[in-house]
Amino acid sequence: MKLKTGLAVLLIAFLPRVTAVFAGEPTEAIRGAVNQGVEILKNAKLNNQKQREQVIDRLRQIVYPLFDFREMAMRALGSNWRRLNPQQRAEFVSTFTALLEKTYADQIDLYDGQQVVYTGESIENGYAQVDSRIIDKRGQKYSVVYRLHKVEDKWKIYDVVAENISLVNNYRAQFNRVIAKSSVEELLKIMKQQAS
Image 1 (tube, rainbow, N blue to C red):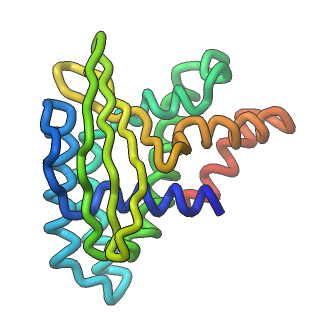
Image 2: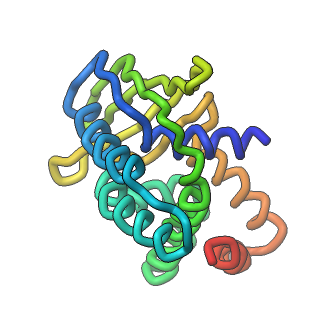
Image 3: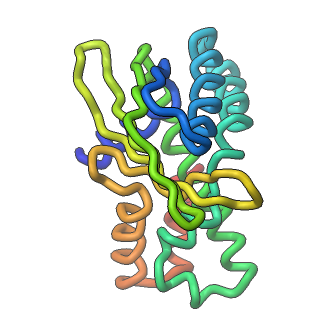
């Protein structure tokens, strides 16, 4: 249940109205994507699968450049990453990205005009953290922290912590359980099934 709540909060973190309290370079990177995503969802028609796919494709074009999926995949796999050859790593990143997309694309109906307030930002040695709160229509507040690092002069998200649940750590725990019982190959097989 915590995972589903965390997933919903994470999805909503990218799709609500934005209120500026703090605005540094990493915050602005996130804000730009959020504002574009909101405009798409405000005007979205999700009456059939084709319309959903069009909306998801437009959101993908906005959100993908903001994330470092390779870094996320590497951190989620943890020490097992070192055991993979370059081809396996590429396959894992691709599968992990597809799994994330499927998980959040299935949740786009949750957007209902939530508001995001950015509450702080810290930057140190090429890493940044952007703190925010999501406020729903009932006034319920959810904490969302974005962890970013600088890649070729752009800030990229490598983890999102929703209500103190790290996306990367959550996946790492799940992945480690599967690998402990079987193998990375079996994990990839399961991930591909879940992403389809």
